[in-house]
Length: 291
Image 1 (cartoon, rainbow, N blue to C red):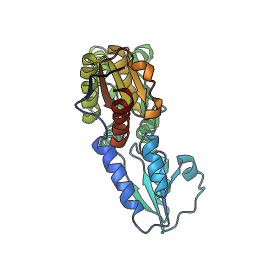
Image 2: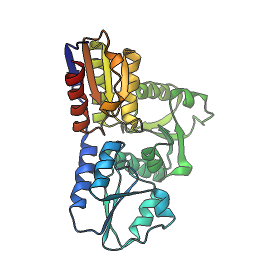
Image 3: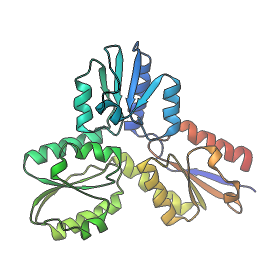
Image 4: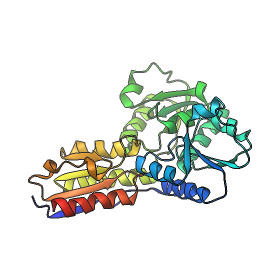
């Protein structure tokens, strides 16, 4: 089989938030701490996490902190992941002797700050996103009793939410922008008193738009990233809706050579937490073993 061309998405791979988080983790690991603890997966990519663990990082859970499993000392460092964490964990670690670092993305922090501010102004919150995602759990923990969370427009439409209340509309930073635009139109047509905050990450939208364009131009699309990554899964869904030959892979071993039978042009895009080396290894395999 012979692939004639490999095309990259114009925007793909590490976003600035992920890059900053990984760089911060590596800087901390070079310091003289006895232990460097990371709260949850720093970013949603197993390859990145495995590399940090090899360098000495210890991954711990929010439950470990809340249950006081560790006796943190002033020789320890605690790093909060790029998705942030829940209010109770921030409060708990602030009372320890450890040195605290926060790698939470600026878009996550902005969404959290807006939520806190508007709750003080007696707004209720409509939050659009995945209630089980750590970013969402972290943000809404700062105003749980005031937050109504919906996965999508259909769920919002089916709810019995009181449309006469005063609402702030927030979205998960990796939410599909086109889908959020539909939700905004619904809000404008059906709610009387609301504000809509733009909390979708610009880098996320750029990657979504680039993937949309690429999916239309190639015969087969590879989306490189973790199945645990929200933004990567959204890129896959965008690609799959436009090009049935779309596959989500994390590493070169996930490739099935039969996918490429009769394929001349292959596109590659990658989630915001996907390291360059993963992309390079996959492209190298394509060129070496399939081209």
